[in-house]
Amino acid sequence: MSLCCDGKPHSHQKVIFWLVPNIMVIGFITLSYIMNEVYASWWLGVIFKALVAFVCYTKLHGTYKFSLYELRNDLRKWSKCLVFLPLVELLLFFFFSKFFDPSLVSHSVSFSQVINNALNPLTYFHPVAEELIFRVGAFYLFEAWSLRVFGKIRIKQVILASAWVFGVSHFVNGIHDPFPLVIKILPIIYPLALGLIYGAIYAENRNIALPMIHHIWRGAVEKFVLKAIAAHLIR
Image 1: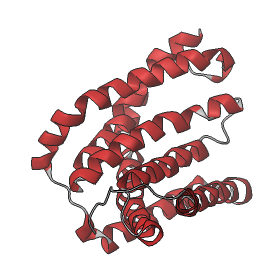
Image 2: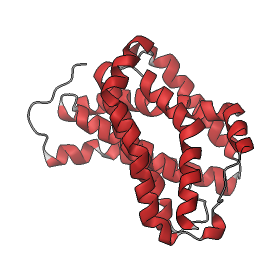
Image 3: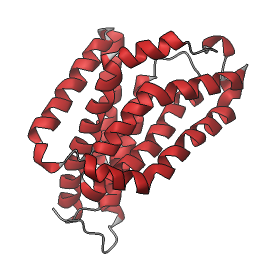
């Protein structure tokens, strides 16, 4: 499938196209509710994510690549954006910090927490599985749907749709946290921005290396650094 960007889609075509990502969003929220409220087991979510990622890996193996050689070029082009995003997250956290109850937030990140996180297999499982699902799988699905709805692949719509589903999936992860709704919305903003960048990187050459490696870095190191900094903002 080739990338086609000429012409503008009609509004009703956009509405039809966005039915699929929004149905996926509703599905994520419903599934999260069932797993947490009915079965009260987060392991079901891990198993479901693993199964979907495995399907994407096996069925779509020829549609993407993991190239460390091309990773260098991707880093040169996108490193500034990936470095800038954590600063945006801290600014958002600072802006919304007045809504936090300090008693609900840990003010310290211990060295043992960092080590335990680094040794936890789930720290690496989630980023790898999510990149297979939201970049490889979602891209393939939305590209096929774009071709059906618009008669061509509108890559901007595909990137936006995959980022939207990626962002809301992280909102679902924190939907049961004891924070006000305005704080629960925060986890959508950063993954949405991250999903836009990951999607743009992936759309260029179908190389999943940088999105996957940076996603692992985010889960293993970056989030703890940001947590330690942000905790001081609400003291």
